[in-house]
Structure formats: C-alpha cells, structure tokens
Amino acid sequence: MTSTLKTSSSSIGSTTTSSIASASSVAVNGTVNNSQLHTWWHSTGEMNTNTSVQPGNVRQSSLYSVQVSTVSGATYYNSFVYESIPRNGNGNILTPNDPSSTTTNDDGITIEVDIGMSMAWSQFLYAEDVMVKVSRLDGHQANASDITVRPTTLGYTVTAQDGDIYIHVPFSSSGTRFSVEFADNLYTFRDGSTSSEAGYVQNSVSEGYSYVESYSSVSNPAVGVEPLNSLLIFASPMETSDMIPDETDSTSYIVSEGEVSDLSSIDATTVIFKPGVYYFGATNHALLSSTVNWVYFAPGSYVKGAIEYQETDSPIIRATGHGVLSGEQYVYQANTADGYRNSKNQDYSLRMWRGVSTWGINQTWVINGPTINAPPFNTMDWTGDMPSLRVEATDYKQVGSFFGQTDGMEMYSYSTFSHIFYHSNDDTIKTYYSNVLATDLLIWKCTTAPVLQFGWQSRSLNNITVSDVNIIHSRWNSNSSNPGLIGANNAFDTSETSSANISMTVSNLSFLNWRSEGLTGPIFRIHPLQNLVNITLQSFWIAEFSPEILGIPFSKMPMLTDPDNADAEVEVSGFKVVDHMVGSTKLTEDNAAGTGLLDWAGGFEVTVE
Image (cartoon, rainbow, N blue to C red; front, side, top):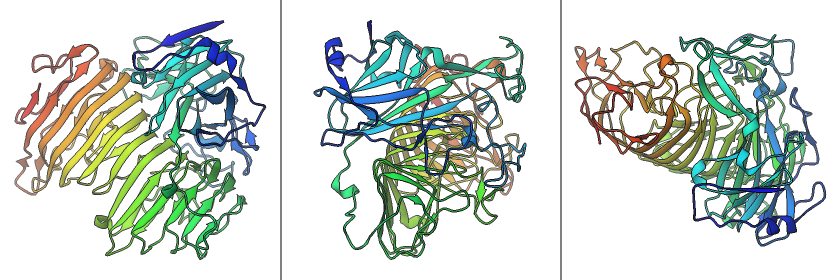
C-alpha cells in the first residue's frame, strides 16, 4: 500500500512509487562511501533506553532505522541512527561512576526520564538528491499523512509504502537539518497548575516525578507538543579538502581507538579521530598539547569526551569533520577542579569546547561539521585575548541537551554562524558581542531561558544580525526563566527595576525572518539594562501563543533606571516591530496589545508596522 503527502513547497519534484520500489536495500551494516553519498555504521551499537552504554559502544535507536539512496541510484544504504536519553542513563548523581551518589538537586530534567523521552538522529554526506527511508522497529505501519517534516517550510515530498516512510531530500550546498515526526509519537507537555511555577506533570508513571492520575484541561494547560522519541536527519555536503587534514603528514597524530588517556604532551599540530569509538571516561577530557591547532572528527567517529585547546601561535584553529563529540559520560556540571563531580563552577564546570585565545594574535576558530551530544553544561567558552578571537561556525549540530544550562555557543566579535541546529535548554543564541552575523538556525527549545539572549548585564553592543531562524519546538512553563524569542534577562531578579547603566547602549540589532511553529512564548521579554537604539524585529511568524492563563506569551519591556545616575531612566528609540504575523493575522499598532500581546513602558519609542 502506498500513500503520498506533498507539503507546501511546489518547487520540489515528486518521487514515483516505482522508483521507490525498484531500489533495493543492502544487508545489515551495508554502507556506502563514494562521491555522491557517504553513510556509516557502528558495529558496537547498543540498543538501551535505560542505562549508560558500555564505554566502547554507541547508543543506537531501538525505534528507528534509516537508509539512504541517491535518487539516481538503485540501492538503499544503512545510516546509523544514534540516540540520546535524559541523564544518559546515569541517574541524577553527584559523583562520576557512583550510582549511589544520587541527589535531588535540580539538573533541568523533570518528567523526561519517566515518560521515556529520547532524541535520535542520523547523519550522512551527499552530493545529489536523495531518498531517506525511515522504518519503525516497533512494527508501526505509517501513512504519509501521519508524518510531519519540520521545519514545515522545507516542503519535502513524503511517501509511505508498506509502512515505511520515504522522504525526497533535494541536494543543498548548505546541507539540510530536519525533524521527522510521527503522529502517534507526539507528547503534550502540561503544566502542573495555572501558576506557571508548578512544573510539568505526567500521568505515565505513578511512582515518577509529578504524577497525576488524569489531566484537567483547566488546571493543566498544554505548554508544548513534541515527539516523545524524536528523529532528526542531518544531511551535509561532502567535506572539502581544506576541511580534511593529511593523516600521512608528520605533524598529524592519529588517536588509537578505544580509551584515550592523554593528549596534552603529543608533538603534533593536528589530532585525527578516524571512524570508530573513543572514550576519555567520566573523569577526563581532551586537554590538547599547545602544539595542536586542529582536531578532525572523521565521519563515523564517535568521541566520548570534551575538547580543550591551549594557547597556540596559529592564526587559524580548527574543529572539523562530521563525527560526534559526546558528553554522555559526564555528570551534570562536571567540575574539573573537583574530580569532575556535580558542583557548579563558572570557571571549572566542563564545556564541550574550551580554549585560550593567544594574546596579541588575531585568531579564528573554524568549526565545520561536528555534532555534539549530551553537553553537561554550557557548551563553549574561550578565555584569553577575547577581542582578537572570532568564530566561523557552519554545519554544526547540538543534540541531547536535556540538562539545564546547556547553552548554545558564544558568538564573539566579528563571528559568523550559519546552517546550525541547536537543541538547547538555556540561552540558545548568545549575542553578547558586536559585529556578529548569524543565519539559517534551526532551534529546538527546551524549558529554560529565551531563544536569543543579550542580557544578564549592561552591555555596549552594535551591529548584530540574526536572520532566518526556525523554531520547530518550544515548551516554556515558567516566567522566571524568560520565555521570550528575543530576550534580555535582568540580573537574576525580574522584579528589580534599578539595575540599568545609561552610559552603555545596545544599537543596530536586526532580527529578521523568524518562524516559530507550535505553541510559542512571547515575541520579546526584554529588560533594557542600558539604552536601546535602532532595534528591528522584522518578519516574524508565530503559529500560536501558549495559554494566556500562565502569563507566558506576554511580551514585556519595562522601564529600568540607573541607580548610579540619580535613577535616570534608560532610553529606547527606533525599536521596530515590522511585518509580524500571529497565525494569519498581521500585527498593527491597533492590535499589538490584543493579538500580539505586546507591552512596553510608555516612554519608549516603539512602532508596530
């Protein structure tokens, strides 16, 4: 039996049933590596949704299998389906490798373990249109009408045959990143009461977190809908020669597969992880030698660890390749100065990426291709000569960010970010520096903090553009964490109004072409900790605001004053909301408060066009 679903875009050709049926499938573990398609496999895949996997194993989805064929070809090849679960099966523990060290300390995870949430993904390289075949391993027979591909603007043709799903993915030189969602696998997150501070409730496990026998449509409003067991597809263009180091060069160090103990004393400029599984353990990470300026993760490499660069004289520092860097062996907030225990420290809690910018040298960190999984804390921070460091990030993916405080990467001055996927449970797009350009960002937002953040302290910023942002899921249930799309947090106290510095100004910020699918928080929640000049929010589309009873969807920009300047008020001028849609309704000055739920202090110059 065959069914076909053609989504909104008409520019993508359909794929016939005969072309699907004529392609054959390879045997188990059969992959391909040629100029048009590259897939890979892990022979140590472990299907395990409850506990940590063996060190040399890779957690493999027990629900999905993925195969890929070029449209011009006749064979479907296996593409490994990775999986991440909340807390990585380790439990909420304080001490690495000690399951008895359990704690009730907040780690940002509430009902996710009890309801059986997981995040799976499969990734491959391609150079022409492909067909992605998705099969359910639980025997579920899907129809094309049961499938949603997000972002929905992609317009991919979805076909079902004999219960399997086929997705026609046109080639793109920038790759593509999307979610494949089955109607029978959607989960509705509900708040525990109408106070917006009660947290989620669940009716799946009676002895689990926040169990209720049944939901009340009044007392337990829905705050988000997303797949219980998600599946993401990351299709990337073939790696270019400038992103692949020469492994035969005398300055290259090829890491041996298995346990890795130390990279701090090697005499090499390049570290190469070839296809295979590597692990540093729960109390170690890759502290690189000062000679190293390039880390390469080959497609099919899976590295359990974190990367820390030392000072180097190289103007270019790299992290390239389409392997995976996973933080799954670490406890939450792993503190490297305290035996990697769960004890938060802004200086020592482990980042997946860390480095030192060398004083007096203009340096660029180029990151192209990697996927990071299960970060235990903020994902990236550098120290040193920060005005001299910029980042060029492309084709970067962040998954399995169930823990709280799993921010997106820092965007230092003159950085460029493009073609990024973020699954994040804290500040996701961090705009704390001037002269930044970010475009084509796909966001899956968890509970904590806004999508874009430029607050927490008074700043002087200028010339930031963040465009073409697709938020495919969000589920805010608390006002205390700032549920805005565009956010600027106060200094940890939302009620404080005398925390501004009028000697500083944030100016010329452009947020363009944003879409938010599903239930959504407010367009903005901004505490102006300094003057704001020429801030443009243009062409936003909001599918639907979350329930007003929780107070979540209301945009706010209150007046703040400067206690060090006789409580002088901040100035906001040239703040524009242009061409915004809520559902099918365009926002205007007349309906800004009603339909748009927008509110700002009376002395501010804000226009809605």
